Length: 308
Length: 308
View 1: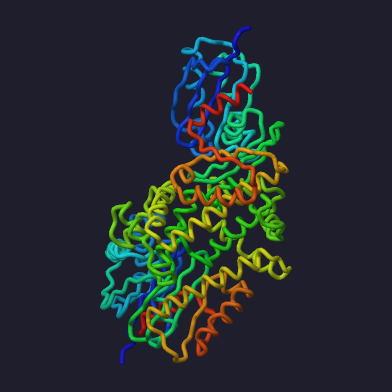
View 2: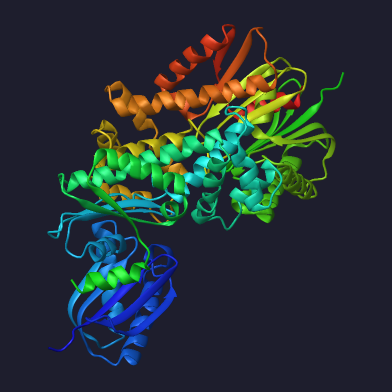
């Protein structure tokens, strides 16, 4: 039997990876370019990034027929997003004359979960700069909770933790909260020496949310040193993240069967306190849950999802 | 005795008012132009706005000698801000050959409080888009709490309340919180019909924080209708605002003497639940406190401050 060929794209806000592989896992092409989130760079630029990657793949991989192409794109959160990204993908595909038998365009977390569970039930919690949970019943139904973005929520994410750290530092400066080690540790990390410098850093002209999220590693350090405020923030983050998981599981009407929860993103990979407490909280609610820290790049899971 | 002449400027993010008055209160000139916050429009533009107003005042008011000029400018929060604004004001003054005997450059809230208390002790709580408290001992010492801006705090402000409303709506959508009337009321106000439309509204290209703050009036409506989530948010807001006031009062070592607290900004002017509960909370802590809702425009208080 001839091998089938898949094409998988992991399109994020900061980078985009495209790979062409055989069903047995042989890599025919892989390249990473800049981000392709149309909300950040606009539709025309998104077409340019994806179109160029597809062109390169067409020339290098030397295959014409693609069995399944999965475009797993960050920021597909509403029907309007899906329509916009579908248009972008179709425009991009005009630049490379692939014959594509099945074309899937999905939110990146959605694709990642399907690649992780490989047809079985399971859930995925991502707590990086933002936070979101996905769950699937193993029968094609995929649900999500959270992921509403930094302007309102993203509870338990790196951005949310960074905000809480800043709030604690400012409140402590006002005497509303007691002194906290978070101040010294944040100052150290930013190489600054005063609250005025912290304010200048926070309101710098080229501010992005990633800047606030970049403060989050300070939390674990402060916890190790026994800081009370850091502990409060970590407990809140854990509580919020556990609610996201519970919400997604209730949407697929999770029963009592054994069930893997995949964990990904900087907060879960690096904040051992949050990771351990979260497992504790969730194990109490779901005795048969198992935990798996994601160790591969998302593109690996997305490629697996294409092969399903 | 000859009357002295004052010049007062209320420089905000969206508009700038300049007035020239006599010490007996006669208005010789007043004009309002666009915002002069250099963090928003840049130093050159700020000089243009202030310089033009000063030019107009010089031509119209027909006075040369100014006893006291007060530039009460939003966004003077750090030493670096004060230096930048001082530079801007001095550049602007080159366009109008006033002879200024005393030049004061201050944060706008600081000036407003001094104009309100007219030399006596007192405090000012502002909860509009942002939140901040000022207190003075009546002997020239002025302290502040909060006002750290939307990127980390502004607890109890319109922006903060808008965020909490959005969080409650999204959490309720995820089933993490029970259904809330805040959803219907927010949809009504925005003239939308779905969560997808709410997300599109929140992440629109020309988003500003004022947009999130514009949701805050919905809170009072929901409270009147007995919504549990709205009540929780209002209680948190009240708690946060009371902490701001307490923090500022502790910085001036407030004792037990009678003491006015001036209240300003949309949240305190329009959210009766928060206003009443806040007064209750503060009266318990400071039995001799009195409350005064600010009824005049800030420029009136800033002009009074110049006459002190």
